Image (cartoon, rainbow, N blue to C red; front, side, top):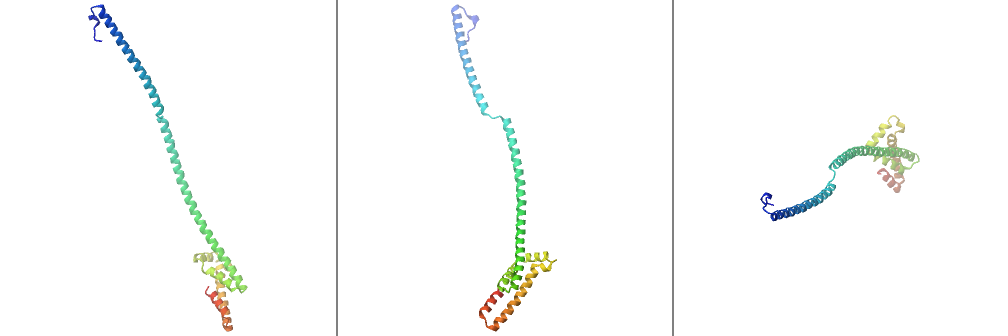
Length: 196
């Protein structure tokens, strides 16, 4: 609207000017309505976007809490790992002790068995007990000797050494006896015991 009101000369020009002003006013009113409509649409879209965007403060608090939980879990895992390692060490130690104890019991039983078999003149069985002793680990034999050194009468190592010597004497005596009798079967049997 470039017309100047002061330059209007007649009534028709004034009417035209008024009509133009109404037309411009109507256009402006339509534009304002469009803008207001778009504004409410934009506000609605902004609300949707705002609802989609998470609350960063809550996210930060949750992240910090999660980080603390992970830290605690990690620390507990390390402590648990250390405890498992200690338990594994103790378990292995206990298993070794049980194994040694089993060997000690075997040695003690071999001593009792060999002694009883020699009394009953059961050379085969006595040889089996002595052989068990002879193939036993030297560390176990040494340990048993140290444990029983205060009581030599109940020392299975001394008993088994004595049984071994007695068994050899008995086998040699029987061997000589069977040689004189030319008892080949029993000679072979004694040789098997002797080289057990």
